[in-house]
Length: 156
Ligand code: PNS
Image 1 (tube, rainbow, N blue to C red):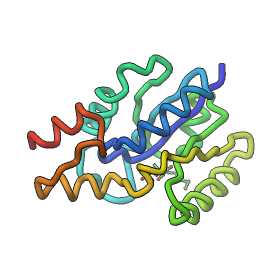
Image 2: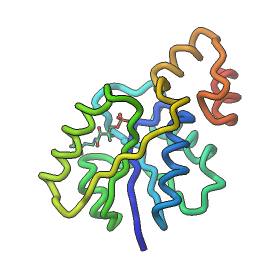
Image 3: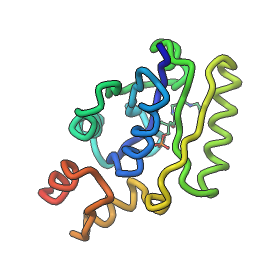
Image 4: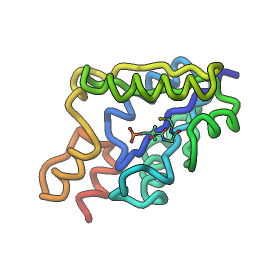
């Protein structure tokens, strides 16, 4: 059973995240999409809201399990017996941060590999913070988030 973890803040989940997950389910038998409970920056949405939005968006993917984790990602990956961490790459600007994180995680456990999947070009500009900002001013976020999230955010 090939198991991978796709960790993140998911504040909120975007179409770019879904695109990465669709790629991951083609490669793995089980993908844990794991929202971090204690991110470095205070999240806009609570952990339970972020998890709920993920669950709503990912209900149709049978290989995906939405969870949350606290503490070190490597400890969570070990607990789940996952040999792979998945991260999405949009543009070269993501690289420094991702490279640093992958090497830190490798130092903590050399048996767990990080692999990078590239989003579709059309999502290269997209981020959760951009979605939050546009939604907060009543702008059009269609196509930037799954339909269920779009309806939910436009109600708020
Ligand atoms: O969506 P994000 O905010 O880019 O996700 C970052 C995340 C959650 C993957 C990262 O902050 C993380 O793994 N945090 C857990 C703490 C940890 O393991 N730190 C050591 C490796 S850098």
